[in-house]
Image 1: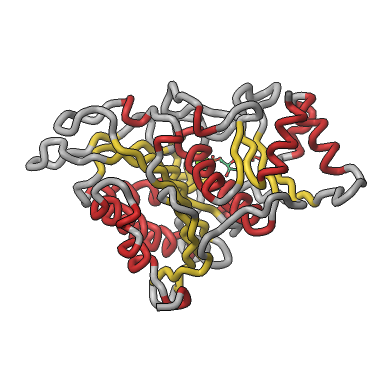
Image 2: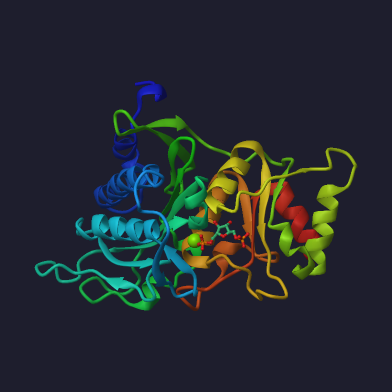
Length: 332
Ligand code: AHM
Ligand code: MG
């Protein structure tokens, strides 16, 4: 069958043999995410039509207002993953603590934990700009048969067995890796089917786009300021062009296709930056590395950081290999 007609469901089954653990389970898990993605996509797309946008009234653990769609996306993903008897625990940007999952007859036999940002960039929803879902999957480290523990979630990114994102953009795409390259699938909304549209995705070695919130410039460390000036200098293939959506998934996705670097540095007002290590940076870093790119906190590889907290923040520099290396040079 040519790629043109390959669906995500078929692709998952075809590739399950390349997975080193009992593969049927991971396939079922990925299929759960695929289903939740379609449901959330449906809701995101009608956000402008119904009275669903706006604040839900709650604030999450980071003190941010929750949009109603954040809450809804969170519920949809959790519900879908709970039903499948594969996942023993879920950690979400929208939940203060991790959720332990155990059905009555199963005695903590599930092996996987999922970390998720159900709707990232959600401040973009009420202005009709792209948002995304980010997910990360690990094998638990505590023994099967016992309740899931915090340490099952606090694993370095190198332990991820799968990661991906969904971008709800001009079209809806699901992009994921199981450590064997990165593939992208586009939803045909008429049929409700994801088709393989972007096989073997890869960052160009270098690019011409830098993505950073330059409004924070005065607060950035000197190395970051110098790198931004470097991007703007007229020399060789520079100046680069600046593109910043303020929606990590969308900025990352564009940069992976066109070549570029995404940066969320630490600053004098946010000592660890803004983005969360476990369910934003690590999954994006895994995808980036599998797509020939890099992800760094400015000094070291994101995926080697030993996490200490569920909602830990970390500075993030991610994208085309040569650009991330250059940025690191400036931050030495
Ligand atoms: P969120 O999880 O509250 O949506 O925040 C994450 C988002 C990223 O998608 C985006 O790149 C970044 O925050 C934008 O932040 P800022 O508005 O500070 O530039
Ligand atoms: Mg987020």
